[in-house]
Image 1: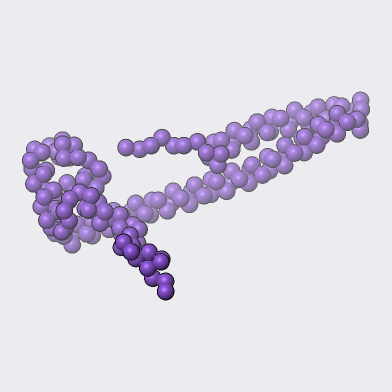
Image 2: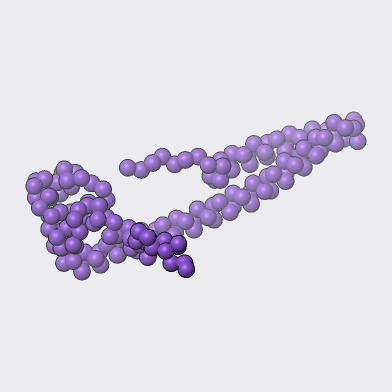
Length: 176
């Protein structure tokens, strides 16, 4: 199940909306300053609006730089995610080959890793739930795990690199 995206101030659409509002306000204040320069060139109202316009233009420049950085970061993260997803798929395929899973067991194992329950796997594969349970039992036996959680954890550990430290093996256990 996917979660709806959260709205953050660094989200490109939010920054773009703020930039548009700032642009409109800056155009308004600059237009007002230009028209009032002819009637009261150095009046406090003109100076205040001029400073406001300058602040808005500075904010637009900062917002543009922030938007560009956010878009660059988004592109980089998307590329890294695509690489990670491809790498995970390759790790899973290699491990399934090492375990000598049959094509049917590979399908069931992949669907189990995706989070489908026995009934959903059976529906997707057009098989009986008993058949899927038997295939999962064969997979667990071949992999040496006791169930779905350990089966999934095997691949999560690969993603984390060194895995989860053993109990008592934290920083305080190694320092003397």
